[in-house]
Length: 259
Image (cartoon, rainbow, N blue to C red):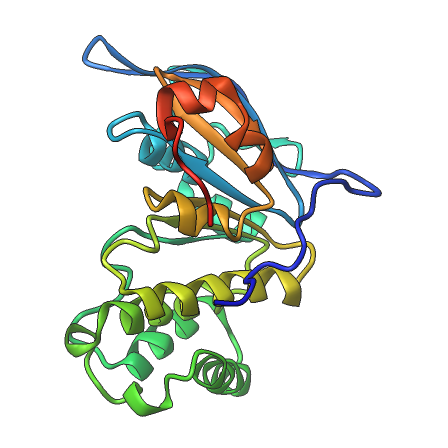
């Protein structure tokens, strides 16, 4: 297989924080899930979020989205405090979109109907909706399945439809929760290329991706974060993480390699 990501963004001429978490903590029924989490997601980067099962990765996603409010700390988007803003305000005012872990499509609608349903919410003008839908069908090679109901699509095809739906609003921030789950090797490769192309097409677009498929995620990430024991234990480029003793101890082990 060829190289998927030919370069990684590690330095910026002008560093801009798209998302910033400041001392975020969260507990459920006296069980602490996140403890004093602070992190920055920069404009234009693909940032991977890794960690053991049950460590709070999806919870962190939900805090960024606005589905959950932290007990302590603040969430900033474009340096604006959005801690108390609901998900729809973050989506509209800060151009945020999500590709959920499961679902993300209307099962009884065709691929085309799914795109139409979202377009009617996020695009006002009919001619613009038609153009954008045609663009997404072409971009994700959905023409052969555009009239097939989502429940009959393969996992990879459903994921493409879900990502196409998330792009209808031209978001500047995309959160993807376990996008590689259940995909075969070729579908994973296609999805990796799709995600890298999203960054290439818009250098100001930030992607935050959580997944258990560490090799697949690190292969396309500019930077990654390891979450364990309620805290961020390591962060850096994939090569930096592979040499980080904390990352090895809590997640990778000694024998893990990307290739």
